[in-house]
Length: 226
Image (cartoon, rainbow, N blue to C red):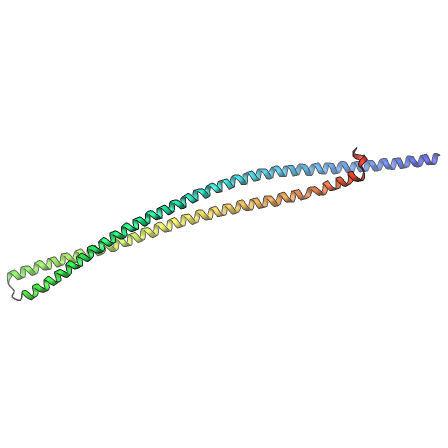
């Protein structure tokens, strides 16, 4: 009888010691779970903050993209204005070419008149000498006018081409720079979003391990948690 009682007492003490050990492990796992849950909640809050910053950054980039599109549209309008100006310059050049043609025709007429004068002035009378000097002066005037028109025409054409090339180079360089900056910013925002998703997935992958251990302990010794 005493032996049986002592055996029961020993088994009871062993059971109590086992229960105390399991409770200690359960407390430890619950503490670890609370720590993981706390870190996970903190990570989620940080993720929300970072997501908010990313959304704000994306909004800024979209706004910048809108401004860029407006500037591109404005550039197209400026190109259209430049084309109209080029049309005016072309018409002006055509007018100069017409004037140049008229001057050449006048010069040719003067040369014909001089040839006729030379044929009709074989005697060197004072009247013929006066007419010859008159035609020489007229010829010189026409030659000077042709030279002036040619110089003006060449100078204006060169100036038009130079202005159009300079404006096009400046607009292209500015647009390329803005597009490059916007693309770089969008890529940086995309990378930040990808890094945030990877970091959050890594945090969430750690939680089931501790939770699984605690659930197994609850299943093996349910009386401890009552």
